[in-house]
Length: 207
Image (cartoon, rainbow, N blue to C red; front, side, top):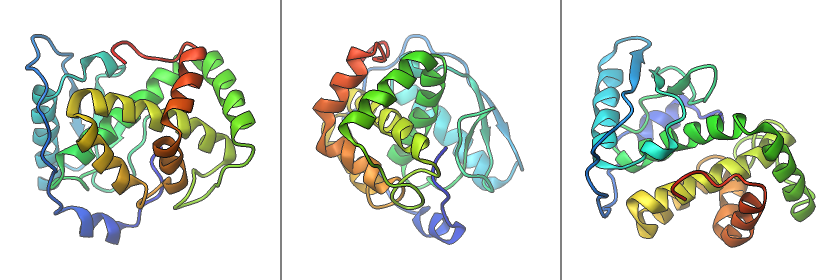
């Protein structure tokens, strides 16, 4: 689950514009997302159209592990039981895409629980202490270790479909927004974390 973000922050950041990115190839096939709007508000409707447009533009099919998506402008993005997005990123395609991929990676790791637990143990050896609580970490220490994995997979996928420069721009933003310390670890120790992910068989198709 994304960190608890204040509504005032959400409203302030809603008008940001997207950085330029190198578009990926058009897709020939795509899982059809089943998008539900919690309140059927205009921001939710626009976010639905934005997400559909992003699915046409970027080839993220290999990392879609659930096709059920709920958009709720009053909710914090989270993965379970239904992948839920909010309407915060209407003005920034890359932030919405990154959030969508982030929550999908939760589903991937949840489907590989034993491997994930072992990878988290390996991370604990590398990072004996991780912060908890907004804005630096997740709510609990185990969730902080889990989010190092989630954030790495999010970053790897984003680099693949948007390019390194655009992905770095997004992660520089996250590193000053929420899970700050955890995103900074991914940026600083990307190769080390990739090794942990690969050693534990947690590298998704296409990465």
